[in-house]
Length: 200
Image (cartoon, rainbow, N blue to C red):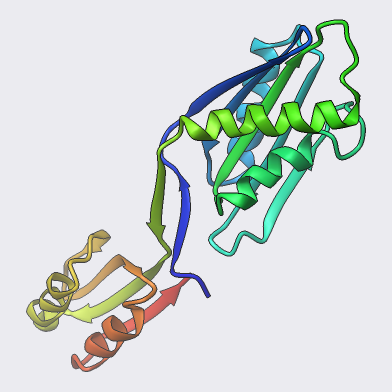
């Protein structure tokens, strides 16, 4: 299982022209299919007069979820070359869309593959690539008397926490880099009355 993955930090844009056809590429850091659908709807509205809106996306640290779409171009001539750029750069949690304005001259399948690949590469060349940690959520429940011991572990691993509730019975949710999960769970389990639930 991966504990790091590569994605882009910012929206980026690139262009390519060939025999009158214009290819405008956009890359977005996105984390779920709803965000992808919303972004596609925005682009189709903004560039409603374009002939094609071809795209590729990939999601998840394990890079197991992906989709390519030729949007009316010959099969394999648009979505796959765009996706090839995600593969060669090992990127995930990303959507790349290439919008084509037809210039009147047919480019042929080879020309289209080159155009979509080059436009996608141009957008990704303008993006800032970042490495992110794969994290898990831990739900921690403990008695008030264990508060100092729990906080010492959280501080020791430099964990941010959310959903905290401090009462006679306390609860916290923390995000942990999966590389550190076993160590955090072990330390917390040694505290009397402390229970930990791991959520991926």
